Length: 337
Image (cartoon, rainbow, N blue to C red):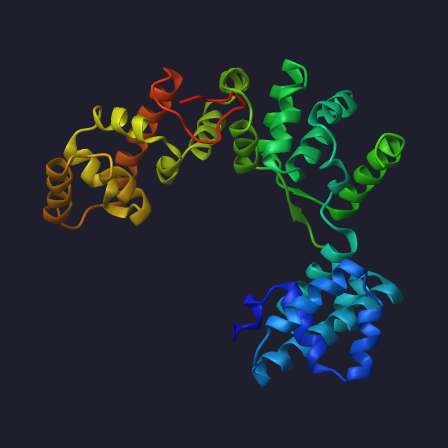
């Protein structure tokens, strides 16, 4: 049992709530659940063991705050609830309670699209304004959004990718309005505070899921108008830490093109997993030489380490382009060893 309530899952909190209230109250709460929920919570109760009194108290307090917030929202909406909650809680705690509750009430935006075939989504939204499509894709999981992007007309792909990369904040009212409009139109086919959407990381995740040809076409078109933006996207698409995703044969090809002193510098701030990946593909002697180089070089500037790492990332991109290494999860092509 975690002693910090923040580390507990919602299911664990529900189980703790049930064992912390009167038996009759717990029975009434269970009666309001669906059968599968009853089974899940019951199993969690069986696994609980001893629950520290402090954890019980915090779970009960959180439940009370959520009930209070829900009541305030029904009375006067989100801002009214925020005003009243901030009288008894800090501004940060009030926002956390309301954000969690809003997520429960409204769910993830455009969730109704997640079980739809990406090709059908693309056909459905392709006539929408690029900004609308960008908003939708920024909320879809990367693997789904990437396939949708790939099924859009080429010119629209570039425009949508650019808008996702430069998108910053969208009001929840606008999101719900777009979501409602799309949901109503699609209903015959398929049964807070400002939210941050889009950005470079979002479009990078989408491009990681499309084919290399589509990725290259979109990035080259963006680069013609905004080279800095294109480079920022490329840097987000593959980082030094992503060497873990390169197959062993690819790592071996990569090592042939890197000088030992540059590799030693790049590994200075690498995770142990990345170091293990690299040294696992080197001879014992070569690995020992690099480790000794890392030890003897002493303190180094972080900018020098990042520069060395970026040069290695650039080599990975070149080798992948030439088909000399494979990055797990990139594109939609199946690989047979």
